[in-house]
Image (cartoon, rainbow over all chains, first blue to last red; front, side):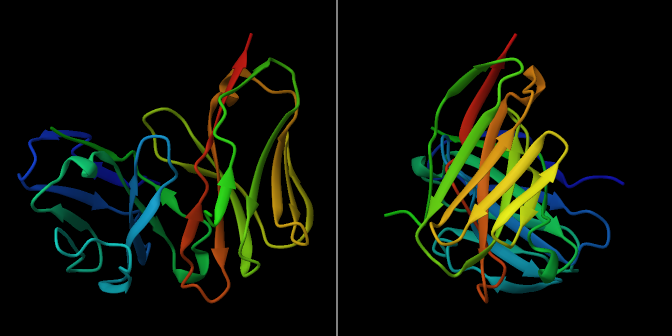
Length: 115
Length: 112
């Protein structure tokens, strides 16, 4: 079974530029999550999708971050414009459904550096 | 005060040692408890989960939950160099939309 795929793996941009990350979850997984992991911290949930609907985006900085999962499969997370404090690893995870949220499968992450 | 507190380490032990990793939490509504392992430059992977007080064993790993003290632990027996990683505790609130709240992670190094 293929795992969660993410691209790119690394990205370096200047502040005020825009960037987009892509995630393809495990086949059949209805729930998709985007996390932000700052160095030395645990992952923090940014947004959770159930199929193509948003379940929780309470910690997503909506003035600069946006995410979509148009067909209920893959997803993109965008930052525009980026700030220095957005430097982090962006992790995508998926689970079979909301009841299996404890069993989330994570991708390798995209390491973003904002200079 | 953070909802979930975890000693960041780093923790360095010799091969074969018993390792104890711990988390405390402040919200008694946390009902599901997980331990994730994260190797460098990789995503976290689920090691164990439990929802009741007491012990749960899986091979060399034992997860312990004490809801009355709001304290969870992960024990690793006969630690191996391949166990060197960051260990993250995580919790889910009952009725909280199944959102995982993570600790900050404890970095473990098992030396030969």
